[in-house]
Image (cartoon, rainbow, N blue to C red; front, top):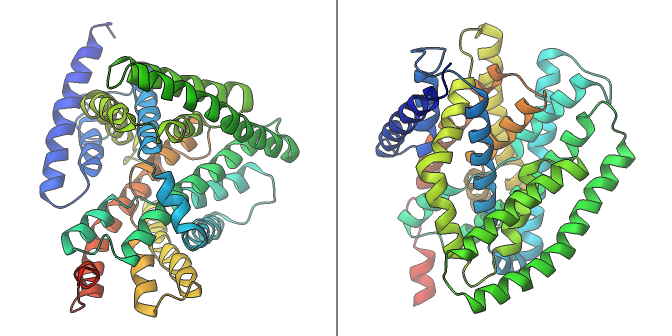
Length: 397
């Protein structure tokens, strides 16, 4: 392969991924679904226009780092603290019920594995993929119905943020245990040490960035420094603590999310991500997805994975909401609102592939879960809200 062939690959990926992304949005599906399908079509499984290369793998890795940095930047710390225990309980249930159910699902298909074995961690990792929540579809649906600022909408939004934080911690621990020379004590200590470092460094860098923000408001040097901080935290997390690099990127975003110019930083990151790195990352998922080896057992597993992924979120979040004194119907709304999956599930799956915890064939199940949950969530929410007075209108009277 000639060095200049990468330009042909990038041109094909960007054009086809964006075209399918726009088509997906017109079909009321997440744009990322279209970009993944584009990668599948242009990849080795169908047309064979683009092959996975080391260059594209590294580009996709930068893409996932930028996505997690942006997710951290968009975190609302004040909202997180305001909703407090209720959102925390719902988020915990929304993580641990799918985690357990996903682990049991894998063992049900491929047999129980002894504690600490590689198969055991593969099973736990399947559960880890199911912990992720992506509420962008839910938020858009609630906004269209005028329900976003109600008690249920606010709870879903806050619980989803905490859900992602807990999910990243779970991923960090599982990836740490996967290392052949790891021991439980060292993994736990490394994880705790990293988050202690994150808190200390977070305070220092927050005040440093706030000073820069005051001296050079709304200038390009702020996003440049922010990006450097993101890459540094990603490197430190992986190199010195054995923790997933995406954890470092997410923490970097959270550190900077309260800055006056955090929106400006996020805007600049989104430009890079939207134009180049994001499409390459999501298309690379399609490129890696191997449909040649799909057989009846994999398709059956994918169907069960989707069903368990949806039901486990509804049960976990719904029961927790009921314990928090929500009415039965409102608890069901929260469970349904939390069941959508998106970018974070793909990011987690990508990390599992890179460390050997899953094979490309299982991307099919993850993609199906994203598509099905994105279609079902708005439909079910509209049915549940049908005939009810607007909470926001009632509050305004």
